[in-house]
Amino acid sequence: MPKLSRRLLSALAASLCMSFAHAADLSHWPADSAKALNAMIAAHAHRGDYAVFDADNTTYRYDLEESLLPYLENRGVLTRDTLDPSLKLIPFKDAADYKESLTSYYYRLCEIDDLVCYPWIAQAFAGQSLADLKRHVDAMLADGKPIPIRYWQGDKVVDGTVNPPRFFRGMQELYNALRENGIEVYVMTAAHEELARLVLSDPKYGYNVKPQNVIGVTTLLRNPATGALTTSRLQIKAGKYDEAANRSLVITPFLMNPMTWYEGKLGSIVGWIDQWKKPVLVAGDTPTSDGYMLLNATDIARGGVRVWVNKKDKQMAQIRAWSDESAAQQKSLGLPVTADKNWIVVKPDAIQ
Image (cartoon, rainbow, N blue to C red):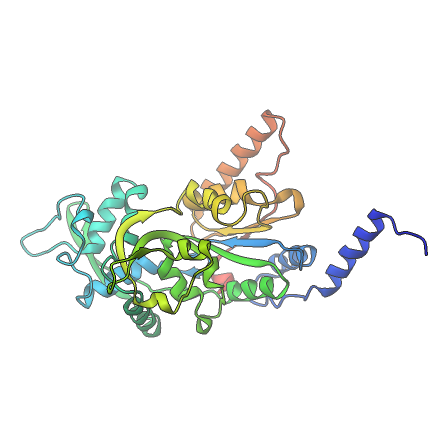
């Protein structure tokens, strides 16, 4: 029997992989986007590849922490009095008829810089057990109603509302299509890792992400019975992770790696997923927080795609300018020009 050439064997293997690829049901995607995603999935099915998604406003509409904070404050679960003293970074701004809310305080920290408020809001849930947070998150999502807030806007106190997450059907379809075709799904979120896990790893919410694959802002967890400190990431790294057993643990305000915002998302892909193998899909919606992983992590050389959820025209213009500038810099350095390639842009309403 003649020996087959290595090239022919590779071609046969690729053909076999393609034959086992399942056409994804992406009915909640625009036709052109679904076609591009299906082509990528078929090309990478069952080859050990992986995808990375942002959570808030990418995986689902709206922001989990920014809705849960006022939801819990309105119910007296989180208050200025229960806030860890280390998180009182600036004086509260009270008026004769207004005691500043935690949401208002958070907004004012964001006015200093997002790099201040991004970690702060994750730390603000310190003192809560994962079991209690799961109960509150489920209740908020089941209620689904806008959450009233009152906050400083300049020198005026204004009233408003924030919405709890609404799940994108299109993203639920895409998450499950990737998994069914042997492409591992990871979430890289600037929210507290434990909060994101409570939603995305609960099968009833339709995403079915492995709890180990949710990577987010990390604070130490304390065992209230023994005082022992741990994190899910440390447990996962040691091969001793038990999601159910962790429910009794209490969040502390102490930050540790990974720190998953801005360039930290890119660094956490390298440090916590794979140092050398790049994801074949990266999805995000925020230029500053998702831009580094979208531009620098996506494996364009192997046909990877960048998915951009275009919630604001201003942010669309920012990421387009950044990708164009990056492409020009790549060209000037004699590098392959990839930064402006393989973008799939979709409006939130198109995948709802």
